[in-house]
Image 1: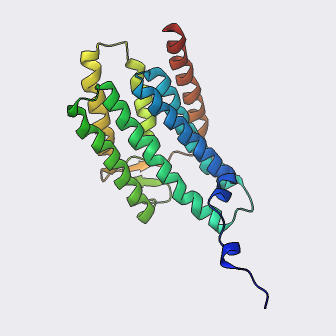
Image 2 (image 1 turned 30 degrees about the vertical axis):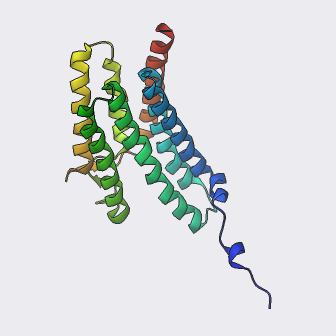
Image 3 (image 1 turned 45 degrees about the vertical axis):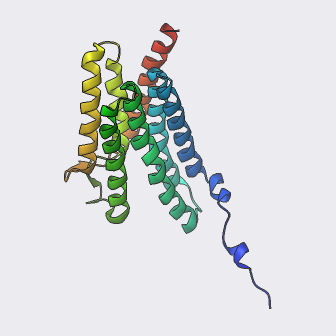
Length: 216
């Protein structure tokens, strides 16, 4: 009797790495890993470039997936699992390490680091179960906004005293953590916002890139 074996029916893990939306998601993860690496080295301009591009790729993976035709249900489901796992790293763990590094790994910064990671995990778990509150509304602040806000805030780095910047950074991180899990409704940014995010990414890349070269 002919038929397929279980090994033939179940795709390999790496077969999903060839799916273009997943490639885009992994590119964002790579940018976040670079941001973590440079944050540990206290090169925060380079870290911000990595983080903002992590946001950009996060915006593009879903856009690519919606435009692609012929994707299987398994590819769709796999991408749906991959995206929030990467978001935890990109917009939870990465900001936590940035906070810890800027605080020179003082134990006083550990609670803030924990809060931003915990809030991200709780927020994404909630979204995985309940989805959007309405057709285009989230409960809590979408976690990718952590990257948008943090990179914009770091424009102030070097422009204000570190005695002022450090407590403000802690406040921003805690504010983002609270907003991620708060019972508030925030709009899902889509449509024309894609062009805004693209310009935002390029402008911040130029700003932080200029700082890198000017400080070299």
